[in-house]
Amino acid sequence: MENSSPLVLMLLGAALMLCLHPLQAQIDGTGLFHDYYAKSCPKAEEIIKSIVEKAVKKEARMAASLLRMHFHDCFVKGCDASILLDDTSNFTGEKTANPNRNSVRGFDVVDNIKAALEKACPGVVSCADIVTVAARDSVVLSGGPSWIVPLGRRDSRGASLQGANQNIPAPNSTHQTLETKFKLKGLDVVDLVVLSGGHTIGLSRCTSFKQRLYNLTGNGKPDPTVDQGYLKQLTTLCPQTGTDDNQTTPLDLVSPTKFDTHYFKNLESGKGLLITDEILYSTKGSKTAALVKFYASHSQAFFQQFAKSMIKMGNITPLIKPSGEIRKNCRKMN
Ligand code: HEM
Ligand SMILES: *[C@@H]1O[C@H](CO)[C@@H](O)[C@H](O)[C@H]1NC(C)=O
Ligand SMILES: *[C@@H]1O[C@H](CO)[C@@H](O)[C@H](O)[C@H]1NC(C)=O
Ligand SMILES: *[C@@H]1O[C@H](CO)[C@@H](O)[C@H](O)[C@H]1NC(C)=O
Ligand SMILES: *[C@@H]1O[C@H](CO)[C@@H](O)[C@H](O)[C@H]1NC(C)=O
Image (cartoon, rainbow, N blue to C red; front, side, top):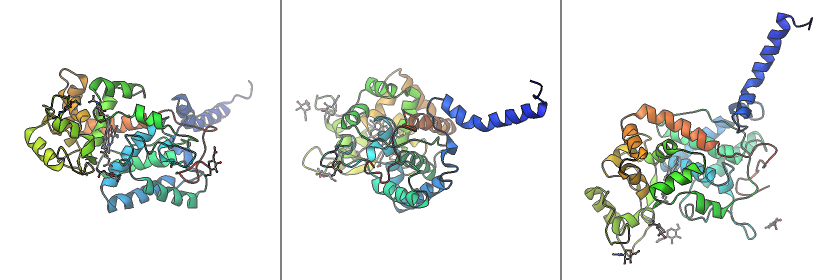
């Protein structure tokens, strides 16, 4: 080409580079990229953060609740805000699934964020992206790592009660079941251990761990891996019969609102709350036990890997244009 002067080639190169960001995002297979709302709603992340901040200031636990909501969203049909849909007379969503019922919280905070975003840029920012960004902000506000959230998820036009019951691990899952359920979502044992580290913040109800206090395997005995003092504390809070299993206690007894490595340290001393927490450490010779040991004393490595694993979890089969929709109200399909 006689016109291919160095200048033209340079311009061409520059033009290509400008396209590279979205292109790269396309190549990684998700179709998501960080600048997604740069033109359509430049203040989106700022608005989300300000409302999460207010909510967490009001109640520190809300950070944990929003983090968990994202996990429960992503494990069912991908991160598509399916968890936010309310049941109606002719629609059954995920809110009554065993892992979610009387347990997942923070829906009102998402509503507040959505209302603010609809005011600023109507019909633009998905509920799925709101939940994803709010989870990141929650971790940051709790003293954890930050990361750049790929964006552009769209909202589902359905939900799966069955998926919620099947895909989200129960708190008495076996080590093998944990590995399998994560693997089915494209997450490996490093992701399993590090994301379980999300239990460095937040609370659990007695009902989620009572089995291990009294009758772990049906032999009438408590889980032998629980520290004796801790066991006493927990049995006082959660008597075997005739009481309120809605009582709550921290998943990380040392620093329940601070995102740190105490979750892993607790496991080393038999003070993990859920069966599925302690089992990561107590399974002899397992890769998860080695990882727990490592992260207990390597805070920076934990933070770095947590950020990576959160991005990985946040990228589970998103709906991208032209699939899905941008809900006007996160609780119902348009
Ligand atoms: C590995 C499998 C997991 C199991 C079996 C599990 C199970 C549970 C259970 C039973 C609770 C207490 C719920 C209640 O009693 O109401 C809980 C709370 C929580 N989970 Fe998980 N979880 C797992 C993984 C994760 C992951 C991957 C994250 C996020 C990265 C996460 C974040 C949280 C948080 C932050 C809370 C506290 C929520 C609050 O205080 O509102 N969990 N989890
Ligand atoms: C379900 O009910 C709502 C009103 O409650 C109605 O608008 C909607 O069309 C119904 N959907 C189906 C699939 O029947
Ligand atoms: C786990 O808990 C459920 C519900 O409480 C119970 O039906 C099931 O038998 C338990 N599984 C194991 C392995 O203990
Ligand atoms: C423990 O569980 C087994 C089977 O689930 C049951 O048969 C037994 O009665 C229980 N023991 C106690 C002490 O609750
Ligand atoms: C726990 O709380 C839920 C709703 O918040 C309620 O429906 C349930 O009856 C409570 N369970 C107990 C044992 O109090």
